[in-house]
Length: 252
Image 1 (tube, rainbow, N blue to C red):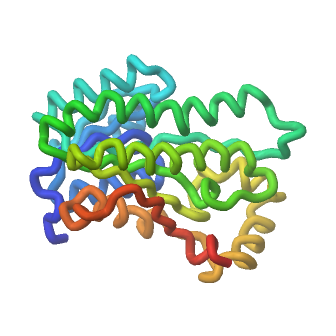
Image 2: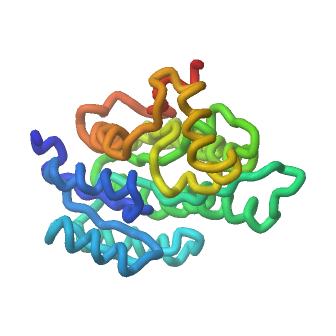
């Protein structure tokens, strides 16, 4: 690694799952110090131990404003400031809208959308004090292009893209960049609800092979480098973007 993030102070939510954990691994390898927030205390503590003294875990429920505020305030205090906020926590529910549970709709928008507002709200003052920085939101290919059974999830991830682009314009004069990463199909347990809706793993894999030009799902380690790029000073002229990492699926 080239230590592209030396001195960077990063807070990330949703850091115990596949993509989030790979992002933390990459941040640490590139020289950053990282605070991770997640509901799963045991898994979060394990990730922090795995990556060493430069990583701290703070139990966080992104559905609760006070919990997100505590993550940002305690995290920034431990880091000595804040340069990058990564909002990666999310949930997935799939199903036909006529049969979709209202509680699942509400949870999608609570975790996938409202939590992004909380994180940004409390991180912005710290980023301003640092003279600028980067907010990285995790959206999805589904936020750009939906499909059967994905209407609710797509709506929540589309809202993340709209929030990202508008916030980027709002914060440009503060030298705070805001971008969204939009993964396509990634081989993680996160996609289990969609896989079940599509008829199981075999059916889902066949479907992915049929419409993804590269003919396969992504691996988490193929998504993590974009988090590093957006956290680094290499991307200081990039803002208001929804960046697809989808094997060409959006254009297929």
